[in-house]
Image: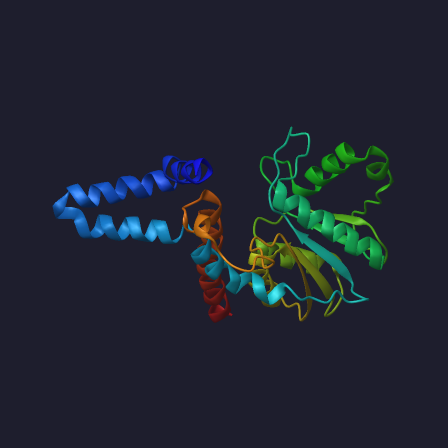
Length: 258
């Protein structure tokens, strides 16, 4: 009983539940704005619960749950996900998983991995990766082969000029320098659909998705009452889905412009 009360109390004393509660109370007491305030409260509640957030995000994640990594490719491209200079582990969660997974694939196939992303204020994804590797295992970091240009074997190739996924793709193709290269793309599952379309816009036909950072737990058989309490985690997943929705609209406009 105490556990249940604690869960409900926490859900509505912290955002987004706190704001849902405020909007709902305003809708009750402010008659002139009852409809818009009520709709705002209902909308915020819906996108803050797991069943709705999972449904929204599943459109982007589910196509990449079963993926086959090829035995041969020209390169792995890992897309940046952010870093914080000065942290013991500079790469943030998403970026860490993307780059480490990309490194493991490239090492296994003995092909180069292009670490892509300009970062902020000169501290790019490549530097964040190197500092992360040094923090985890200085010996491994020291033995990592870094190359300024494309090579036919395992090496880390920094690509530090791109500010978005389309530039990631264009610059990676330029680094590889081959006609019709085969590229393994590593990024978060929810972002993969958009990333592949942008790589195709950049002229890459042979694409192989290697998705990480799945946020929906497909091992969960059903929802319980706690999943219907608002949470920042569910709201974040809804945000990811909405961000990709509008991102794909921008991709479509790029495609129409040719």
